[in-house]
Image (cartoon, rainbow, N blue to C red):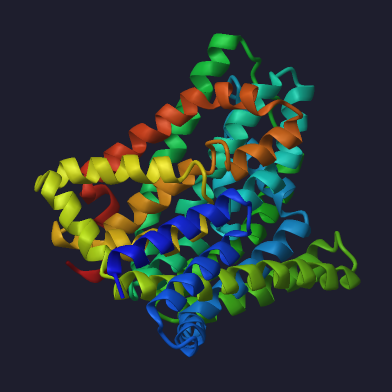
Length: 431
């Protein structure tokens, strides 16, 4: 069979299915099947590859993280973290915007999802900011950009997907590598928020009453313990990511239904249904992407891509810049998870041939594609934020530009100063 024709069938069918608005998992599976049929490879290979894609113990961590995040999200976690952030930075000028940034970072430490971040924090903070005199477009821009911290701050589901797609890069190292970049991103977003707030003349926030402080701290501490259990168990070596996720689910269940008691126990069935639906979509996407990746390897596409980039330049910094631009462009029309599963097997040989650490590249890719969640036409996080704030996509996108540029600056800093990313992983590994 002609390899060139097979590549054309794979790429053309993939683009065609996307233009027809097929779900991304079906798009990946469909283009894989068509290419397999042309190559006259037994169909059983597709099934075997899909099953093998889900046959990973590490993969069990994702359902547990999703369930723990869903329990805490439904159980009033957002408002408690907002109150804790209010205690820390609420009294500064533009305080609600700064509270928004901090609360999104704290929530991201538990949910690991930007979409969950903007939905939970945004549903409380955007209406509150509008009520206090903040412009709607500014409120949406702050919340949407701050929610991106959830994809970098561990425990990020997307880092687990990258680990699987990259052939087993250490999940604990990826989690460690995301902490400092997330803190830098938080600082930059808070600075940008403050500058705009001062320019627009927003008032200072209201200080928290002292009698409320003990309860706010206690509620915030109990909420943050979910993330502490996950990260502490992994970093200490006491638990695997999967075991930490299971313990976090148990803790979240007890805190939500027996300590906070904002929800009746019967609501657990609603949480389970939502979690199972999300998990089913993720697992099918992983299975389809594994088969797709096998076809890519069979057609030697990763090698061709590596040769193409090295043919343009052999300078590591130039190629990293090109990869960043490529990922930013691809992040506009496609969602984050499928891009990680599709592009990692293609780009991984390119960066490893340049001597880039797989953990470093993982953080670059995650932040890069996270920024893509803010860019139309498939800016999931931006769309959710605009829907909550009741502003148009055009207006929300315009207000987001200063934050977008700030995040690009952070991306370039992390790309070209790898020590920032690798400091914590190297310290814990003793390198």
